[in-house]
Image 1 (cartoon, protein in one colour):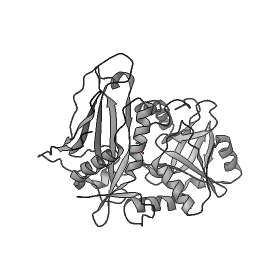
Image 2: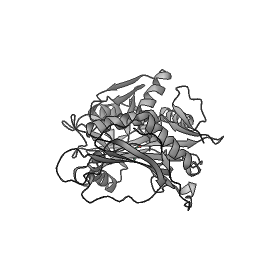
Image 3: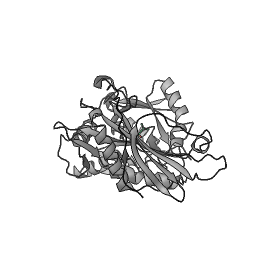
Image 4: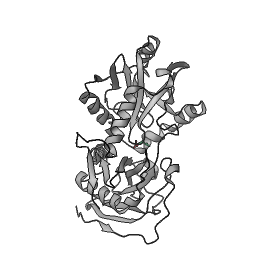
Length: 357
Ligand code: COI
């Protein structure tokens, strides 16, 4: 693949948003990355251009058959103004896993990490510095061939956009209330649950809206066949501390292999906290809450970081966790992971990658 990134900078830089009111995913920086794929030619014309609308044919296959994959990672500005990415290679590795499932051509992972660094470096002034803020990086690929027959597209666009963000949930690090979904399912084994593809999120929206109507922030998905075992939360993987042991659903083909999930497992092991990846049933958690051994619950994700869970609602059975307060372990994990990401704590694992000027 030709690897020189063409850069066209914009002259009229946009005003930056107030760092105390960022929210999540509402503001976009001055530039974006684009690259095209054409069958026979491969990925080509990598370029950084002013952020702005794309022009697509209405017949572009993504609008009809949903070939679209994406990633989410973040850049952080340290106290001494360095810029750090957190495990970007893991995201590009996972993007290729999603690509493979959706019959989208593979990308060159190392080149894409370089492209992310270049884009972030150009828009580095947009990286917020206030506590709990970062620059969210959204790489995504979608099918652009103008054709209505059902097959894999022969043309794609790879785009990366950047968004300065604060907390994903309005609650911030305060525990969220979650509805355990008993009617709809998100994914089944053999489907696309492990891929980060737009359709998985589309499938979640109705349950999410119903949960919100009843006062819950998110949905906890159960397995798609028996609706017995825990899978993941809308935008996070999920962990439970039961009787001193941390449990998380094993990667079984219908769960996303989260980068934060993987980092949390490493951290817990390094602290000698027992952590087990296995099938976890909702019934078992309910029993644990009744006998007082369900000590903590938290979700993990790039956007949400660590989000403590204060309550689960399972068919009107309320499972209140740690009196609705953040648990000690959840707090320690939050402090450690955000400390490493923002350069305030030593990175013993070699997870952070510096973006040069
Ligand atoms: C992320 O954590 O980066 C995600 O992709 C979750 C999201 C859908 C907001």
